[in-house]
Length: 198
Image (cartoon, rainbow, N blue to C red):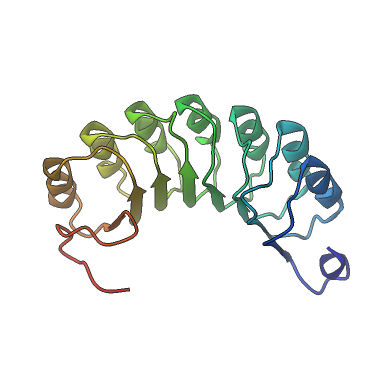
């Protein structure tokens, strides 16, 4: 925080310390912050703490690996119009949470996990105005949800960890979107015509 206050950095990365809402509230005096990466999965937050992030008018990249990110938290995050990258792998929200984020004008990359999101939520993702990269973690989508994602013309990269997609569903995706970069469970799907080692 001190480096950001002095103008020496615009980035905060917290890897080991367990954080809470008060830690987020303490950030509200750092409007120059562009990247906030909170990587301790044992941290837990609530809407009262996340609301303080609304003061970060220049925030472009937000990663919260901790718990507690529900629809109320997403409502607060949706006010961050500068946000381009949002990563919340331990989400606790349903399709309605994606509705809350749908009007974010600059959100290009969304990585989230939530077992409560369904195929219906994939229809909402198609409405995101700037989305180019999606990463779904343990979201129980099926072939029907994958078909909705295939309709997002601006989508360049799709990562899915988990899900209930059949071989036929993947084949149809690659038929419709042969240039889409796809990873399944952290690797290229064997059906991906562009698979390569990483």
